[in-house]
Image 1 (cartoon, rainbow, N blue to C red):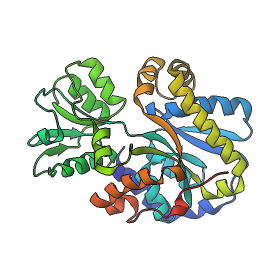
Image 2: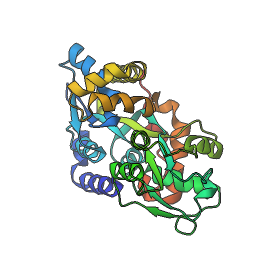
Image 3: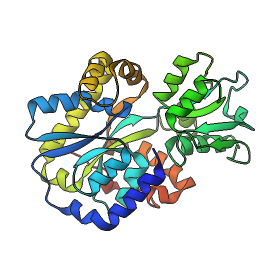
Image 4: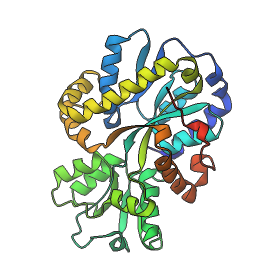
Amino acid sequence: MKRSKISLVATLLLAVSVFILYASPKDKIAVSVIRGPSGLSSTWMMSELARTSPSEFEFISVAGADMVVAKLLNGEIDAGVLPVNVAAKLYNTGAPIRALAVVGNGMVKFLTTDTKVQSLADCKGKTIYIAGQKATPDYIFQFLCAQKGLQIERDYTAIYSLAYPEIAAGLAGGKISYAVLPEPFASQAILKNPAIRTPIDITKEWQAATDQPDYPMSLFVARKEMIEAYPDKTRILLDSYRASINKAIEDPQLIAKLAENLDLGVNAQTAIIAIPKSNFVFVEAYQAIPSIEALLSVFLKFDPASVGGVLPSKSFYAQIK
């Protein structure tokens, strides 16, 4: 995701459309789903609620997080999934949204074909392709390298010019030797080139540095007015999302077929590979405050503006009975 694009959309729409968020919520709750691997966690929820409650819920597929931001701000949707820092920035800049649940945890991998690299310290002097400047993979990697005394540009060079699939293809083709990529792109590269290794466990490094079990990457958020007007429907939505993630983990083949039928931009074969690698979880936001704040603190360290300058207040975290 291009954070600059998301930031621009958010800034412009907050300036001209934020008042729409205060409009009375619709009877039918609209939820966005991002097409591609990240949308697979929503597949069973989309299918089940369309069957049981078609007059109460509708789902709108979108191309990326920038469209989720736009549709939240213009009132077209009531809920959707965003990167944690983007959700925090929207809240801190005045958008009345609330965090409902973490739906995806850490899935960033360091990949290389260099057999000499065994630790972060071995990244010194290397040119590393990183998935998304000022995105979670970038700041996670910078933070963990700093823990080992390595500073970007001084001790290693970061390249941000390629998209996720291009980095994966470059690794698979032997044109790139070092990269930081999220799943499922990391596994796609490894499948095409078995010489690619993951000698550095980013999650274990994070655990050692922060005392947190994992770092969240995807946050399910909703308009404050929707939550207040329809707490019962919000609870149904949350319970359905939890069940949807459990279904994905338990039966990837079922979800893969559903995703293909729902035209989520992922064929069944790819979905079967992607689901086990995507680290789908469901933790209600108020229960995940320590892990969310640990991640946002890293963003604050490198780029305070990326989260709106401060950690969100506790009112950011919805608690639905």
